[in-house]
Length: 82
Image (cartoon, rainbow, N blue to C red):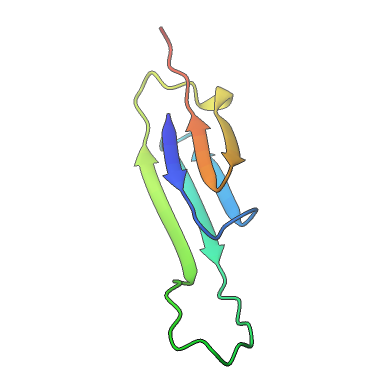
């Protein structure tokens, strides 16, 4: 199971499996939402794209991978052959 905490993201996340390389790829992009507010002095939110690659073990069932997002936490389940 892979768990990624992705604050500030909702639907901008992509989960892909490269079966020939047995790699799980999680990618997305966080856009900076600029709001007009004259009382702000500093904003500490990063923006831009990200990609993370994870090599899967030989016994991973790549055709049965499931991903879900709840409360800005991405859960990816990769079952294994027993």
